[in-house]
Length: 288
Image 1: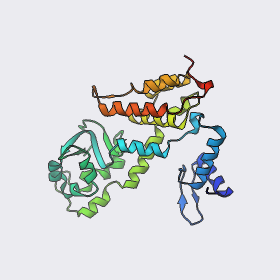
Image 2: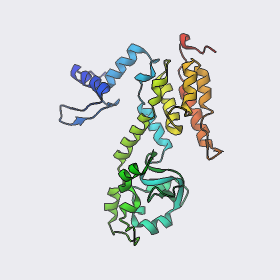
Image 3: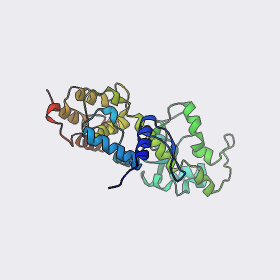
Image 4: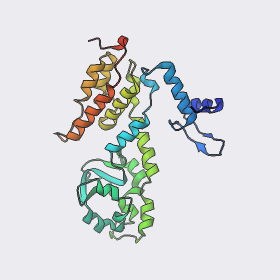
């Protein structure tokens, strides 16, 4: 068992509350919020869990590392701005954007889609079939946000002249370095997941970490604002209908463009199983 100093524990508590930065003994700077890899925070979190038990207020939970890993399996990591509503042939993409398509950074993107296809690169916010997206499923909501990520368009990376269509002639290593980095994609993804937990303030009954993770997965996939599918589960939880809530998850958001998708049916079934993995204590059993 690893012992944690009082100062480390105090820092972890402050970071948990204030999401601040602090400098470690080796001189490195750690930014909040903390994670389970932080010894002080991990000890603090275990202390809270031991004191309160697995059933706690939703407000005390944050997504687990297991959830982040699970969600990443459902979302392709694409280091350029793309249209999530369609794909383009690799041959056409090479003709338009040049050698950047051969970058090792794009090999997993090409491998994730039907042979010879790639997620359609976005040039601007006009004529989109779906939504402009970057990284691990981050939706670009408007023109202002697009400007922020415009440097990650393949047109910008290839240095394509908007009038002549000619490329700048940058080398492949240089262009590869201009794609969104793995670290940037992961940090943006975690911020997105955390943002999709705003609904926890509306839960009035105690839940578990697995329940919280299951709800977060549903919300990340189908929306987190009031009126989104996750709220139909929250209403059942608030009435202490936990079994009904687990069953409800199976029915939510299993279609795309009017077609039921096996992948979404399986995902909802897994979320439902995770939600129901720890039966409620007697005082929290379904009341109707």
